[in-house]
Image (tube, rainbow, N blue to C red; front, side):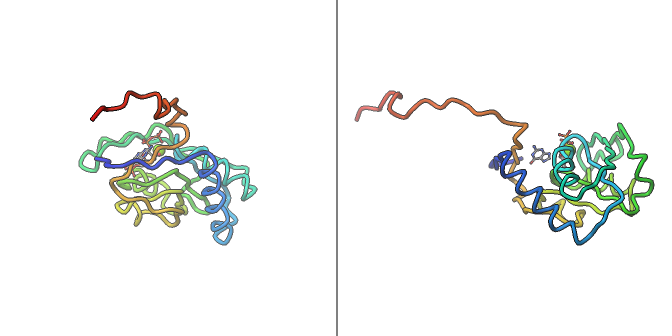
Length: 160
Ligand SMILES: O=P(O)(O)OC[C@H]1O[C@H](OP(=O)(O)OP(=O)(O)O)[C@H](O)[C@@H]1O
Ligand SMILES: Nc1nc2[nH]cnc2c(=O)[nH]1
Ligand SMILES: [Mg+2]
């Protein structure tokens, strides 16, 4: 259960994805990228632009909690990636690590990178940009919208 939220803006996401791309340069070149849908798609597009990578496949898994891992459902495989050799897997984050574990099992030779990693998922990654506390829920730009907040002066004051 999350006890706090971390809001990521479009600017921050773009900066973090560029930083990841910069670190990935030393690990490439990659034959292609596999984006884990849906959260990995925008980071993958930014990284593909930076690495000049034009072969992009997607993998889609619907996961539940760790106890029910057997029920995880592969909606789409990344057929272009074979066993993952030479490919880069991109996701927005790892939390429990269940999604990453499942995808890595399907593409065992691929390199796994993401923007944000919580401690439980961190060991499943090869590379990430920012570590985030386990109890923090990350709010991505596509999860949020600007909201009107009334000025303090417009609110009724408490009389002593
Ligand atoms: O490490 P885990 O505990 O598995 O959580 C991480 C996954 O959860 C989110 O995806 P989600 O399955 O919510 O779907 P989405 O990408 O379509 O939003 C996120 O994009 C990661 O893929
Ligand atoms: N948006 C979002 N999705 C998640 N899926 C698992 N953990 C998270 C998180 O912290 N934020
Ligand atoms: Mg996802």
